[in-house]
Image (cartoon, rainbow, N blue to C red; front, side, top):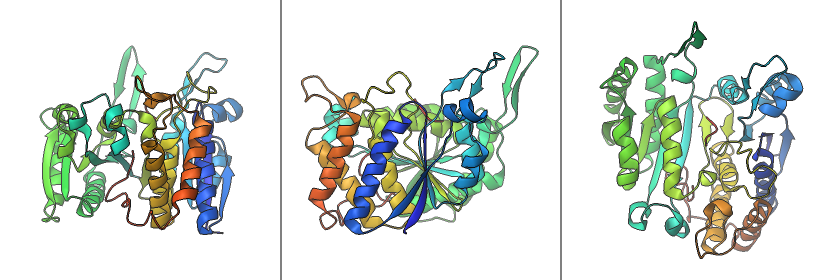
Amino acid sequence: MDGRILFLPGDGIGPEVLLEARRVLEAIGEIRGHRFEVIEAPIGGRALERFGDPLPDETRALAVEVDAVLVGAVGLAVRPADGTQVDASRGLLDLRQLLGNHANIRPVSVPAALVDRSPLRPDRVRGVDLVVVRELLGGIYFGPGGIEDGVAFDIEMYTEAEIRRISVAAFEIARARRKKVTSVDKANVLESSILWRRVAEEVSRDYPDVEFSSMLVDNCAMQLIHNPRQFDVLLTNNMFGDILSDEAAVLVGSLGMLPSASVGGDIGLYEPVHGAAPDIAGQGIANPLGAILSVAMMLELTFALQEEANAVRYAVNRVLEDGHGTADLQVDGGPAPVSTARMGELVVDALGRVGLARARGSAGSVAATNGAGGNQC
């Protein structure tokens, strides 16, 4: 047994995309001779409806006993009989906190096969290869908040230690890539950003080989569209990273393409960045590639199976180069879209055709490149 993995299908399209991710995991296991034990448990809206908790005790207990966790999607709001509304995405926030994963890694690169499918001009997106390193356990999502006497409030709070550890993570990743970190803040207005900028600059002095700069978040949002190739590693707080990584999905053409890894604790958490998308759930049109590429990140970062991770990325690129795409990647005059299940089958077939030998050296690690790249929060 090479490892135990907790699959949390979750809500909406989550079960559909995770089914295809599991098929790819099993296929790479057969090709390379690995065997993974997969355990499933509830999270999100379905868990809330059944257990009254978006992260029930059973799921909590399993999450701390496995080697890795893979989430499909969460986010359906459930309205109990008393009329209150509970946001099921709280289950995901609680899971990240349970596992102690303070660093969220979201690679964004544009495969050559998708350059013409991006809504941006080809010269803008060709060669884009960046990583958003997002602080995940602090900031406004975890600060005090509430509604009192008609006043709503959410408080952004960061400690120097929290900023320092996510900054170190970003610089370590950049050191293995193109050696450039851009720290994103709103230091012209927010006290939390003033501290963020100061600590990030202090950490940068320990990495003289890495180019460092700070950029205001509004300018960064503009630059991601105007000149995205300037970026290597974007260092962000929780909320800015959530928003900017979704914006960066436009470069690839679809949120459905982007994987992510949440690390920093003993157990890695992997998930596509898209949300539950209940409007298309059950229709068989969701893009499973974000989930499949999250499997590649898991193989690399948790199980240290670099060649296997590269093989999955190579297979995804091969399928895209052959012209296949789900409905979200369809362009006028292009081939008809394939279903969620068919996309999974095509990736499995490509794995069998390309094997590991051709994948060696064809795609780098997360630190170097991800090969291919609504929000789950």
